[in-house]
Length: 329
Image 1 (tube, rainbow, N blue to C red):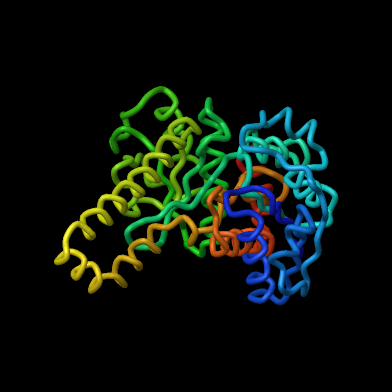
Image 2: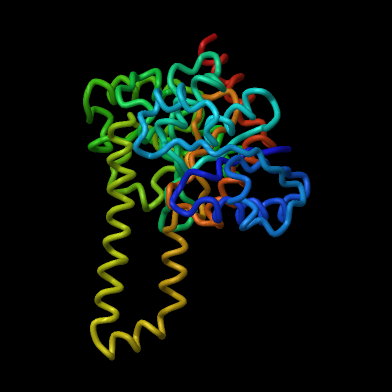
């Protein structure tokens, strides 16, 4: 199995990607990695090239670039070349921490959609208090969703939770303003009725306040609301840890207490960290394309590689194809 990694995208590039790749090939004997980026910069951090090859390029898509224009004009960029490795069969999956819009565009233009999937979904795993996490589809790939799109998200998310996360009969919830069947706007009401008929374990409407308690294993929504949920969770978590740190260092007594509870705080931070869950999959494409967090460290990259590897190994894309055909039949 081979995975292509864009090493020029993200805040900690290329060190995080190189370190994550070396850890991955050590952990998975069947894995080969292609690092796509500036060879000289990669070699500054590469201490072992076992099952690791370099595809050299000096062109990069910036976060400020227009996604479609960047993909069309920067054809030798590390991101586009990584996706092209998948399109042309030299890699089974690819990962990038770079420009999200550009990666979605490259995935659509080069890899292409699964037949029967109208719109791909950008789908991260988010933390829960129990540590299991939940999959949120969509967080920005499709702002103006239709009911049939959300049903497809529910099916794809259920397959992923089962085959990659190991959750048997995953609970699929519809994000809404209340749990009652009659709640919501026309989109959620129509989607609710369709999800009840879908080949998934649909548990009904779920509210945003309950997401982190593990009310569902998969939560579907349109990309606009999903992005608001994602940013709110990230912002709230960051603010709480910042306030906690400020309070625990405000006095000598607090510092002593903080020292005694240091390991507990580390456990909490790890449990709520995105790095433990991998990246956001672009579900609905013909091959796994993973968007890693922009601030990914080597642990996050390693987990994104694990995620991509498991999607390939468990033939998630093939299963999605067959299930979508059943819905359309």
